[in-house]
Image (cartoon, rainbow, N blue to C red; front, side):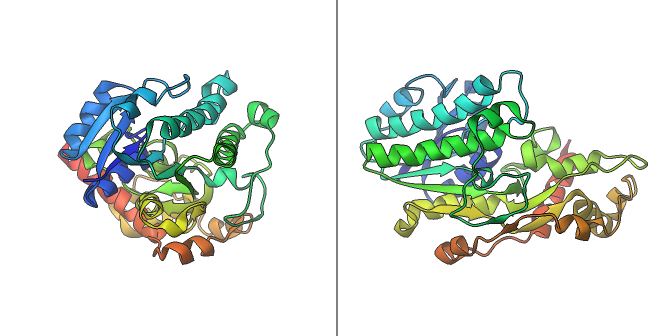
Length: 334
């Protein structure tokens, strides 16, 4: 059974990557920050999952010992990265962990992964364009944010962390010439269900996966919070990672994961139409506002990714439905 290494295995995207890998017959060794998180995943996955504790991926050699124990690993998936929009110490809390963590992963794979032939990095559309601007985005696009802006300007921290981490990774491949190929998966806002229903009962939804639970928490009479952007299903993001592992033609590519537009009004109207019992406790929102909001959205063209992988993108509405259904199942079991 082929072994693969996956960092940040308990993360929203990473757990789905692990789940899909195990279903396809791979043995997953996941890095986690604590043994408690590792034991929980081991119980949830049941078979073909083990873990290594890596408390911090910023320290030099962070992944070295973990990889030394598993010389048979054939691929390295680096999915761990801080998702923080604001910090009192942005450089040390977010930028350096993202940048140095990626470098440490690449260095470990080169030095202690004698059988590693593929390195797949979970990047972001944030590395492809400045999210405050309306523009046209493809797999070849880059965010030209400055390091100083990432440190100091509101809303720029995460963009900077993903941009500089990915640029550094491509630079590593160019200068170090390791014996493995490199592919990135660059998702937009990621929606869809968690890997396990039991986690949907609490506040396990984080980052973009929390938008639907947050809409459901909004009370009648309250103003619906404003958020919008591009959407993709977490299961499709996981599939792209596995495609990068199994399809040699994806070596050296950036895969742009995108399925459609979303905003909180669209989520609300979906709930109103399909879950009237839930909708009766929610605000009415502003019907029709989505069409106007969509006019300010960037155009995302991921036709190259679709052509290369042949993926059929899960519709945004199905991501909504499957997430809400999972939340309802989890609530019923509490």
